[in-house]
Image (cartoon, rainbow, N blue to C red; front, side, top):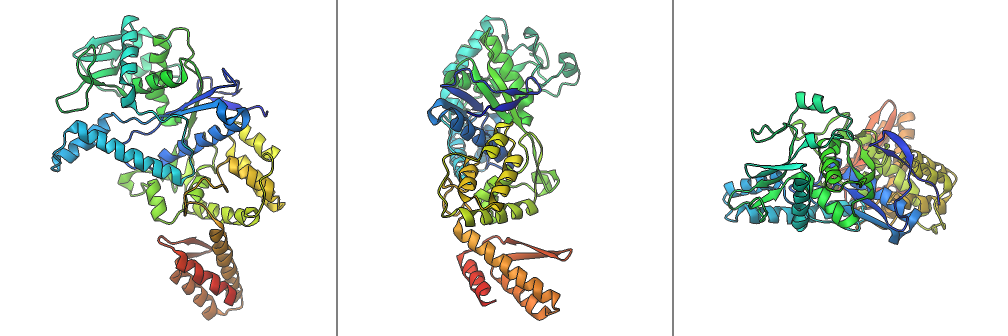
Length: 473
């Protein structure tokens, strides 16, 4: 078994991974708050930690890994969307609409993650299924003087936990001075966070010792991970934006509720995603959902390749050029692996790269070398550990053999066009370019070179025309 090293956010260093129980390796990933379509930034942790899930199953056995990814299906953002629908004339209660929105969004999320080849985790708990466990943990915190009741709310007292801020490496005094938190007169400390809060009539609510209400965000993950993985487990993962306050608060309340436990031995966080060098935002018009990618004709396997092209801890810049390059690479790889048998195990250098803190860029570089060496079997078995070149994509989501055919045909036509331009036969060069555009292929000329991408809506008719053109030329 190859040794795995992982970067631990808690210690700020790379450490040898030694599971608490090799017969039951346990990992928790903070999943989505389900009120809208998943964007490609949401997809990055799902894809990254899906690869870690695969690596752990390969290393310890498929039946020896428990992976939990939750759904936050009770949250003020979901309630706000329900209120919006009510204001637009919907007659259902806010509670009913909240449930309906969550159900719908979870279906979308599964559809989107399936298109990216993301395997279902062992458990996908919904927060609303664990309300009793949350109430029990809040009661334990109150009994240990780590939480207090104020105006119908139950709040965690950060002053009661001396190590508060240690995960995010933040000083409590500095945080208090620059706190950007909810200002509430009933808080003893501005940094105290809500464990339970009252709900107005018609809103989602559950009975509790403090009256009908709903849980705060942070307590949800603590209760679900405790119930499904135990007080101590191996890996807690999520985006870097969750380190503070969400993961800091999770750790504080879990460690205080269960003195002597470690909660999570490793904390892992992926970097943020940008679009063409800038922040992704609806206000900037560059917001991209996974569904948007499909509608633009970007195959799920290609999107997965892009999401793995940078090291998970580093920022990832999503660009059109990176999408085109990934599509072309996958098409070339499929040409030599479509009839190849899987080797018994992944290539050793490839595996060593993955075991080195999920170094996917290094692993992909090794796949390029296997392709150059025409090692189809090793390329296929190794790429499958990344979730590429396999059968884990729904129809139309992977760079299937016909995609390889069209890629080869387009590149052949562009080579003919390049020769025509060099010979100053511009009529022929323009005819090839126009025919490609008519078939649904965007051609871009820059610095004497040509690149291409399939236009949104490209279909099989376009594919057939391109293949016939290539044969004619």
